Image (tube, rainbow, N blue to C red; front, side, top):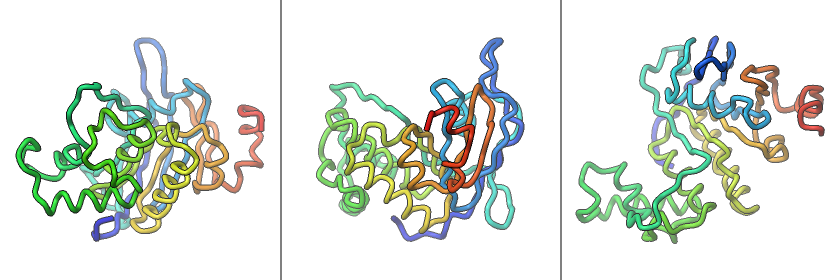
Length: 242
């Protein structure tokens, strides 16, 4: 990670409604994620998890209020949001390499011109932290789904964001990739104290790696608690049968 000032911010979500025609997708959702928390947003398919992420990313119209604050309580008007989607497809004939993908976000010089050696080295070092430096010159459309998720996570953390949002980011990863993914998330949280919101169906990894969970059902947050209450929750047992 680059050597920068710690990210100290939180997100406050208050009375959020999202409608699609006559259907209510989010119904009066309120939630707060504090500095350094890793919050897992859990629920069955269609419960509203991805819609809530889209509202935070301002990708769907909503009513209510979503605000970002630093550790002194000052509002961050234009937060840097790192985002890893569940899936991102590239056309098979896309010639863009992983190096060019990163360089396009790190330099004002068009990527079809020669990429500065310092930038190339920086990108190599970023990829190395995720054990994917061997991908640097490969076309991004030709790498595996698990490799792509790790590339996208590395991309989302450069530069270090104020908040990190992850939508089923480990779904395409093998066991080694999942362990590496969560180790990077935990290290990032410890180093930069940023809030992390992730959607996941992997209840085992959630219990091992997050600090807090919010359970959403039919567009409503029906329970939120520290992760140590997860196994004790009657709602969790009822919905997931564990």
